[in-house]
Length: 69
Figure 1 (cartoon, rainbow, N blue to C red):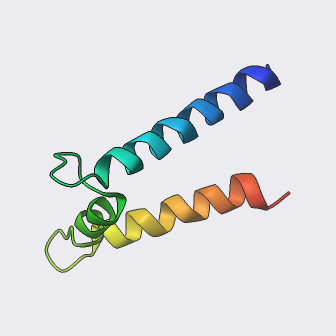
Figure 2 (figure 1 turned 90 degrees about the vertical axis):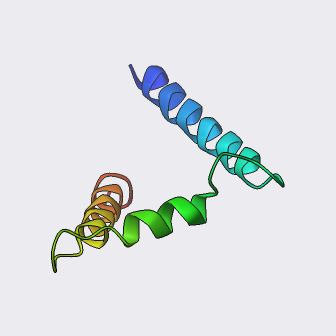
């Protein structure tokens, strides 16, 4: 089971790395990671910055599950 989990996370990391490389090419239709983060951070519902709260929650989850051991 551990090998399956490590393989899954490794595959996801490789996919993200490939998308970052493809997004940095000139004339690419794939947005860069910075553009995606900027779009998420600017999302608001009324006066509530939902994108920022969601990103903070995501980083909290990552830290809790991978760095708190």
